[in-house]
Length: 609
Image (cartoon, rainbow, N blue to C red; front, top):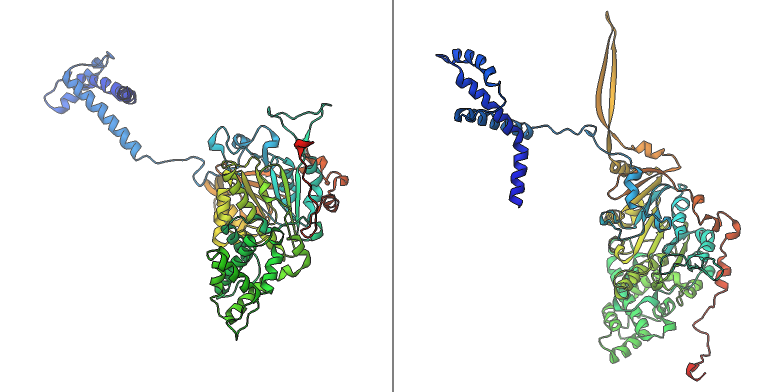
C-alpha cells in the first residue's frame, strides 16, 4: 500500500512535465512533416507545418514524435530541478532577525482557566501550576528568576501577588519582616476548602468553609519574635551530618585565604565526629548547638603533653571500647592524628567559626525545633524566614534552613509519596544574594520540579548570582524556565538581556540632496537589523513595564501586575491597616515547651471508660 501511495505522489508531482512532453510531440510531428534539402530549408518548412501539427491538441503517437516529447519533458524537469537546487533562500522581513514581542496568542496555551491555579507573571501573562498539562509541550517548571533594581517593585508587583494566590505551601524570605505583617492575616483566613468534586465546601449556614494556613516564622532580626529552629532535629543518617557540616562551613566566616583548605577539612572531621556523637549518643533534648559548643569548650589540648586526655577524649575512648566502628569514633580518630599544636589551631578555628553561638538568644532559638520543615508538603503552610538586609551575621541560619528544607522534602517525596508531594512547595527567595550560599543549588533547581517543589530567586542584578555561585550561576539560570526583568541599570544584566531578546528587521530609507549648477535628489530604501530593545532603552524602561521571558515563547513587554486588583487584596494590611499581623501576639498564644521543664504524663485507658 505504501509503494502505491509513493507512485501516486510521484505521478502527481511530475504530471505537469508529462503533459508538456505530450504537447511537445506536436513539435516533433511538425518537424517530421517539414521538407527541405538542408537544415535551413527544413526549418523554413517547419514554420509552415507547425500550425497544421498544432491544429489538434491530441498528442502524436509516432515513435519519433514521442521521443521528442520525452526529451522536452525530461529537459524541462531537469531545468526546474537545477533551478531549485541553486535557488537563493529569501526570508522576507527577517533578513537581519525575526525577534518580536509576544502576544496573547503566544501565552494562551500556558494559562490555566482558573485564575487561582496560576503563577502570576505580569498583568496579562500567567503560568499554570499544573505540572502535567494536557498538551505536554506546554509543560514548564515553576522556577522563576526575578531581576530588578532597588525600588522596582520586586516585592509589591511580583512576590506578594503570588503569595496571595494561596495554591501552595510557601517558604518566603522576608527582609525586614514586612511581608508577614502585611499578608499574615490573609494566610490565617486561608482559602475555601474544596470537596472531592473540586467545589468549595459549605457549612450548615451555606457559607464557605475556609482552610487556614499553618504559619511558621524564623526571625533572625529579633529572636524574641521567632519560633525555634534546631538543625539537629533533621539529622537522620550519617549523610545528613555531612550535609549540615558542609552548609555550616560554606556560610560562616573563616574561609578565603590561600592554604586554608587544610584547616577546613580538619574542622569538617571534628564537626562530623562531635555531631555524630551528639546525634547517636546524647539525649534528644541535648541534640543542639549548645551541646556542640560545650564539647569544643571542654577539648583542652596541651602541646607539651601528647598523652593528655581531655573529657571529650575519654568519652570517645569509652565509645570506641563499646562500638569501635561507630561513625563518630572513626571521624574523631582521624582528627586525633593531628599533633598537639595543630589540634589546638583546629580548635581555635572551630571556636572562631561558632563564636556566634555564644549569644544566649541564638542558643535558645536553636535549642529545639518548631518549624517542622519536613511537613511543608503535607498541608498548606507558610514559613517566613525573616532576615536583616543590612547585617548578614545570622544569615547562615537561613541558608542552612533552605538546604535542609530541599533535602527533606525531596526525600519525603521519594520515600513517602511516590515522587510527588501532595501540596506544591514554592520558595519565594527575596534578596537571594543576601542569604548566603545554598550548597548544590545548581543541582537542586534541576531536580526539584518533579517533586512538586519550585524555587523563585529575586535579585537586584544578575551579577549577584555569579558573585556567589561563580560558574554554576549559568546552570542555575538555565533551569529557570521563567525570567522577569522589572527594571534596573546594572550593565551586565542589560547587556545579556539585550542579546537574548535578539534583533528584528526594520525598513529604512536615506534621502540625499546635491546642489551645484543643478540640484539632484536621491532616495535609498534598505533593511537593517535593530535590537528588539537596546541597552539604553532597557535602562530607561517605563517603571510600570516589565519584560517576561518564558522558555520556548517570544518575550513579552507587559505591564506589572496591579496588586490592588487581586481578589485577596482586601484581606492584606496594604488595603486596611487593621489587617496587620501581630507576630508577638501570635507567638504568645502558643504553648511553649522547654527541654528543662518537668511534665506529668497521664495514660488513659479508653476501653475502660
